[in-house]
Image (cartoon, rainbow, N blue to C red; front, side, top):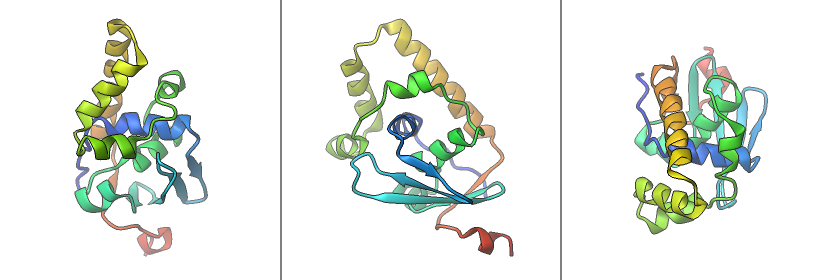
Length: 154
């Protein structure tokens, strides 16, 4: 299965999950707590196949922020903790719901609240574009349904 790319804003959501310590890597799987702390998602993997029960992965069939965050923590995608920390404590679920999932609008509002210089904004956008480009060439596939590692090996 070819990797369908998520909206680029999902990388910023992965930054928040990492900065908030909401991702727990376990043996062959990870637990990810949502930004509103109301749900726990599970990401499983076996080799280059990843599955998750978060809505974007299940319904839209792209790697949602839980998978992206796991890939970052596994060292398969780059990330800068200093940049990730800028997005600490953001309730993406609430903001995305309020903006009817207009992710770019939410991200612009967040950047306005961060009061960063245009130069720093440009650096962050460049950094995220690099991560997105790396995701595009990463040799992984994403399953629509949650996958148990033992099922994949059969």
